[in-house]
Length: 168
Image (cartoon, rainbow, N blue to C red; front, side, top):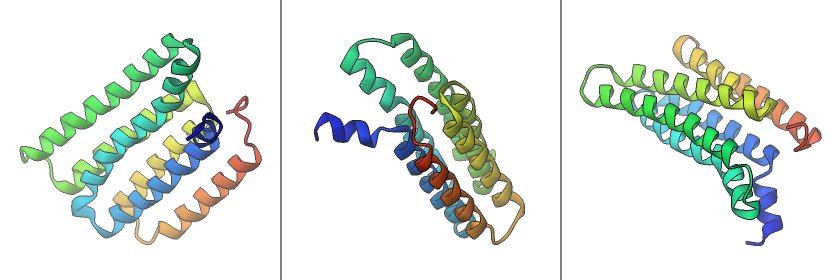
């Protein structure tokens, strides 16, 4: 894969769309398979970490600058991963149930993504709020998938039309 294609895939818009689509899939899993949603959100914690760090890592490898920002982002996401691992350990030891473990890991993912968005731009903030909304929907509502899908499609459309990496 050449540099131009990789840079295109690592654009703020593409990563935003990927995060929202993975979040929608998680909302569906949380609605349909509540007893296994904790596994999905735990894997998403790792995947969102990679998605968040990949652009900064690629920029650092290409230009050798911005080590402080990359280190800060690594520490931030490592903290979120650590919290999710603790929740998963509680779940594995039987201290919390499947559904609660999924909601707690999802809430950790939402908070970690939101706080990362404060540093990186509106797309991260929106994704964190969207994940928080999914947490509330999974916990209290029925039949929320279509409404979340409409919101995600609207956000992806806005992101596409406002696809400026300067404005992030």
